[in-house]
Length: 483
Image (cartoon, rainbow, N blue to C red; front, side, top):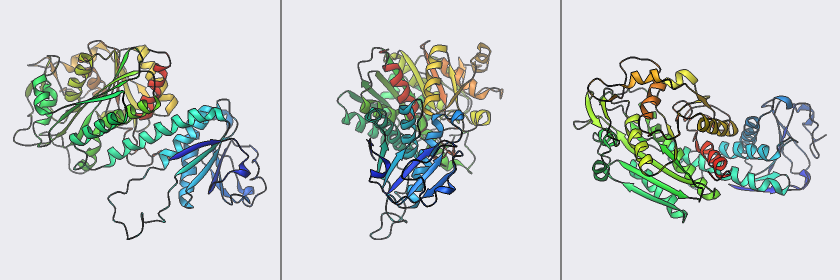
């Protein structure tokens, strides 16, 4: 998507569609005032009205609601509605104009994010008629012009990079599991490294994983013919401390011997959503040249039942030496994350954030509005919560009380990966992971409810790429202070 900033009157903008976002009660700007359809315009939130100025002939006015109730999330929604309107009229170019607000950079950034995220489509496997790009006209929105002064150029470009990275993550989520294997994710990591001189990639295979003693990743992967991969992607931005990013990369999760019900198992291709978010966040951070050092660790495997699969009751040894009773093979994510977190510590991460579609319980607790956030460090948790609020990728902190440790204790081993008591399942999983961070400042984000099927205007149904923009914003915030 091409995105530019133009400081010119709306009447002089060259675009197929003009999109103007207004607060309730605002007057329409020229050339929309008095144009056919302008009498129907309302500024109520999400209300969209098409008007017909003399030039460019078509415009959509999107309401943001009451000015006193405004937050950037409404601008994302407004940008998405504008993009949907552009699609309905086969516009390939669109000009976006927002209202006056106290923070014009944040406003412009949010509008562009919403517009680009709403442009995502996944149709590569659909049959096409000869000569047609798709089932429609074949026209796609490919240029956005933001109306404003030159000071908007930098935040708008940052918004473009982050939103497009999130769309790349969504494509990784959408692709079927016979395409996105652990090797495929490793290939994507290598491609990111090849694009940037200050990004390096190391990929460990089955033997190297076993030789290092990563018992969790070995156990989960032993039932599948697909070789596991442990992916390490480093970005050297010269930022002092090293921020560790860990993403769960289960490319298909049957549940193993503790097999899942068949009804929704096809959706388990998205159990690598944390890995997708980490990969594409690193790509965006490198493009933005953020002054921070990043160490990302992605454990990737399938979780399949077979004659060689890990069995309920097996005992394994994780990378940091702790032993675990595998009492439920469908609680596999915490086993591979445990090794990845330990490895991130071993490689020098000073603070760590992990993202994982880890528990169904978080959907019961928080739905698809908030990711669950668990942390051992108040200051770092506040940093992540701030990034979540700024990007609209919301996170709600859950308690990490010492009593939850009782649930993680094993009978014949140090730990169990599935407590016999069905209590605080999301917190229990976070408390389990805390055993592997060696007291580093750490945040765990359970994105099982936010990675898929959220239904917001700018992501709709299906994959969301949740976490990409949050991680990029967090890196910008930390990098700006030269942590």
